[in-house]
Image (cartoon, rainbow, N blue to C red):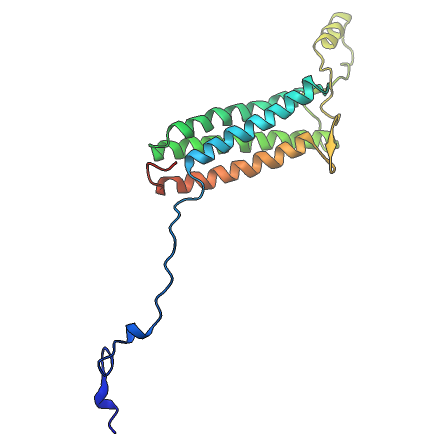
Length: 198
C-alpha cells in the first residue's frame, strides 16, 4: 500500500488538516474595563471622600488641621476639577489624556507634600516656619505678640489620629501616590478607546 500517493499539501487524501484541528475559543471583547470617563468619575469620588473625611474630622470631631494639613487639601481640589474635565472631554481623547496626566501630576505633588508631613511627624526634619510654635529668640515684645497671633494653633509634628500606625498624612501619601500613578497609566492608554466609550 502506497501511503505517499494519498498525501497532499492540503492534508491526507481529500481531508483538510484544518478541519481536524478543534477551533480556538472566541475571545469575548469587552472593550476597556475602565474608560477615561470612569477614571475621571473615580477621581471625583475619591477626592470628595478624602476632603469629606478631613472636613468631618475637623468640624465634627474637633481635629484641628495644621498648616501642612491645609496645604495637602489643595492637590485634591485640583485633581477633582481635572477629574471633572476628564469626564466632560470623553469625546476628545487627546485632550482627556492631557487632563488626566495633569490630575495625576497634581496627586503626585500631593503625595510629596504628605510624605514631607510624615517626616515632620516622625521628627526626621523640620517643618515649615508656619508649623512651629517656638518663640523666636531675641525678638521684641511687638514681634513676640505678632508671632503668637500668627502662630499655628496645631503643630505639624503633632499626630491627632492614627490607624494601624499610620497618620492621616501617611494615608494621604499612599492614596495620592496610588491614584496618581493609576491616572498616569490610564492617560497613556486612553487614546486607544473608542470615542463613544461610556
